[in-house]
Length: 463
Image (cartoon, rainbow, N blue to C red; front, side, top):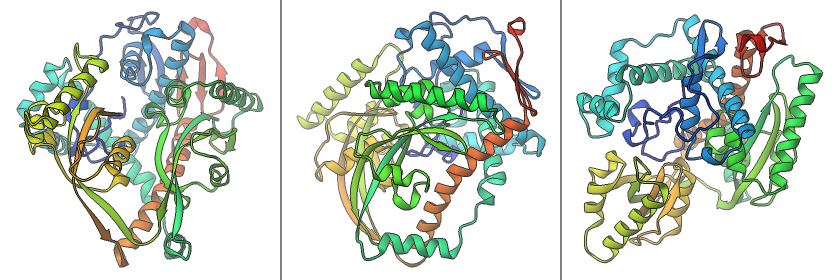
């Protein structure tokens, strides 16, 4: 039930990009359910019920194992593992509630559409459908389960388009104001790379529940003040849908930051963390990861880039993966192999590997922040140092740059998309909260039931 991350190219930030962009290297292998998870039982008992759906212990553990890149599972205390399990289960409950809604409104993905999506995935990886199936099975996954996972993601995307995104209206006045702000007399403007931690508050929550959520937020804020890593705390304790990605919500200019957060963000320096911010959705803690000054106007700098990606896999741990990347980079620098030869033989991004690492022209705004930052920092024809993104270890080469003017209808479309993205974030959060409030949810980890009339304890005897 995990939201599959299917970006294209391999390190674009959008978590619900076109399914044809799935890179096989990032399809999670079937987890060894108890390996490295001392304290979690392998029993496949039911841990939650959402209307007609059940979530099992085994499914929850599989989700937890997929967090291995963000959280050091082996060194976590039993109490920390229990809290992590609660956070993961809560996210799975949200997805289950959305799938239940998709069923109720008649959203179906027939085999024809599913096979088209799977063919797109295969083509993006330079494979036939049969080869994709063999690769999935070879990684220990059940092919039928893989198909079901893709079908569920397509249902979730269709639901969000139909009931959230299609309801968002952006007026001409909104667009005019955005363009005036971006291209007005003040040519230079500040952009902020933001991350957040959310402690959610259910709709119609009792004063006691609100106070409990506030106390959780205060405890998290104290941990951050004591030096805890923001991304790690987000993965372990945030209720936000982007928690698994360290809470990263990317670069935003002032026009794309919710008005509730804008004054808070503008008062922070890079690296600083806000005090607790109350919203209708709960309690937020915002971090300004970085800031930058950009020149306003209707233009964008694009980059023609090659890259090699290596990701930890099998018995090659992160340290060994970085060392291999360093050796391959040095081979290119020493002239022992060309960049394209190394990419074709070793890169774990099949889509670009077959083109010698060529990614084509890219807009930094659409890329993983770590990749975009490195791409913008190196000189033309220079081979970058090895660096890490959320997808693995890379080195890259910028072959060319160009400035593309944006004017007229393109600029208005950019404004419409930016405003829509900001509102979509807000509306999707409200939408999922409403679905949860209307669903029957029995959470056996927290011993609570939501029966659309409030929460109540269900007692340990139902564990």
